[in-house]
Length: 509
Image (tube, rainbow, N blue to C red; front, side, top):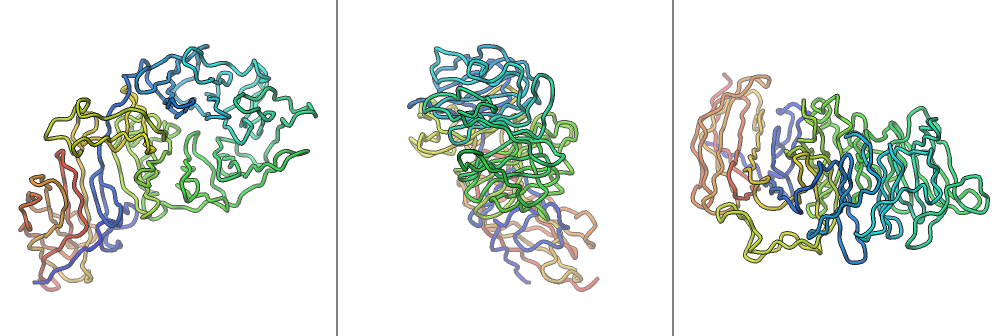
């Protein structure tokens, strides 16, 4: 008998290459299992936070006013803020956009700014006694609209402009510099006494969105990107076309990381550190994402980050789904990909919260709860990923052991293993997993075999591995190409770094 050891289970998913081409420790199919520090471990859950929204939220953003930490969330006809204790309607003039009119915005000099591309841009000064105010009162013409608006330094930058019904899809328009604690007072590009201006960027593809990278603002078009940098009078800003032919698929499809921007473009997921985008999913999950993203509702995709786990979540509607029900998750430290199922997610943002997760407030049962005694899962010292859902609700990610009370089903699968000799027939006799987790938790193990790389494996009867008491599972499967599958459907968290395959060679035929 021989033993083959898979010593590093944390090498991630590769769904694009054929399984027999993959290295040892790379998985051909996964769901709800992440890869970090050499381990494969099940994702933690999602838990509802804040009161149930009064409207279906399609966008969210963090905002801090003095010491109060808000999550702003917008529906089709209303905008609310929630500080964890009180939810407040700050709508003012009701917006008129549809689901696909994705909001953009941010914080400029302590003022919250938002825009849906259909109505006049708005701002909020942070006191719950006041509503959003339209920018027509501070120099923005009532006949102007913009697809996206982002703060940059002391300016507001608007992209893809419409003036009195005439579209200027390549136009970048910036405000006069704002005083601290105030919104810009003017947008008149013809006034030589202020530093407002506008610029058309070359190319046939329209502007989509923008995201700051260090000291520059990266302007994303559909198939290209530009750097916007401050140079002062008389030109105020310089625009430089960056290398590459990648842009952004839709508004909200980029996030900043310590390595640069991760951007969902038309046909790729790229890393943009300012010197040209580089694919990070090609040969791993690129075909998986773009063969499965809904071709009708693809612009509902979004990209966000989970900084507490060094992850980027590329969220998209899978198959016929109308909201995002799948996330391809990239760990920027380990450079691994995994897959997380979602519950009709509409957007995600990263922020801090003043919510506390006290023992009395914990709603999970004794069997479900995976936290330690008196642990506060919602530490205000940590940036956390929040998501909005069409249910409607707002959740905090990596909290609890279930998705809103539903047990998370996770599995790891690797097919096409030839153990160094694709021509030899092998018979597996057992698997020895080394799994950390709560004593008594169970993981189901199946093994399979196939005689050719294109054939589906014949799976053995599933065996139960009990953490804390089981040493191995005994089962049999024969073929030139072997398979193994680990499945877990209970409340316990677990992780696996390595496992042994016991087998013997059965000859060539």
